[in-house]
Length: 252
Image 1 (tube, rainbow, N blue to C red):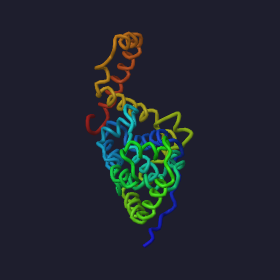
Image 2: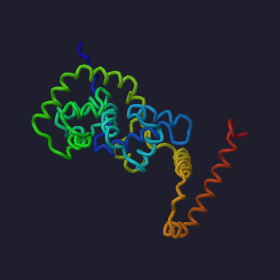
Image 3: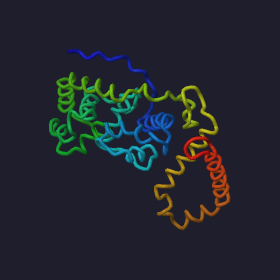
Image 4: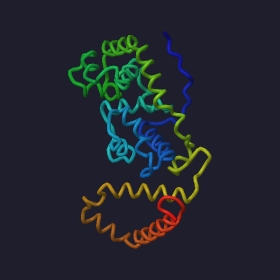
């Protein structure tokens, strides 16, 4: 049986870190951090990559970055969501197909390394990411294994597309996205909404014990901005008071 694929719309083109940032923007527009549904919106990526939601949040913030199998899975997920990831596009076809077998869970990295004849998984990672050359025999093995499992791979991709439809996320303009992380399909969102998103995001950041490892130099720099921070605190205090007056939960 041949699996028919609908044409994939290109959402964004760039290196994987740029694509990840763009995906973060789309998810944040749909479900801002700290608001109901934010964690659920990040769960599909976490499930696909086999990590917890907080790990995805740290990827988006740049606090940590994925590596190893997690990175391979992330590349496959981005491609699944309509991204043209330069690192994937530049892979030789056989290597890319073999990487997708790992990314979509048809082979573990340990099985993959053993099948190709690598003594350790680190060497296979280096080869797949183009940081180390491979001989023709190993490249041919990757091609043969990929072709042998290609039908199963396409079925796995088709199922993953049903579960992770890119159309469920808003489209973000590629040029404008670089200057503002709070853009929706119809253009800029209101200043009021943007302010609330920024405030909620700041709250989430501060809740992660941001200041517990501050050095003496960090504290000195912070003192220089104390008045600005106090002014910002007063603005947020005023915003909170205004929100408390709104009808519904938390309001009158």
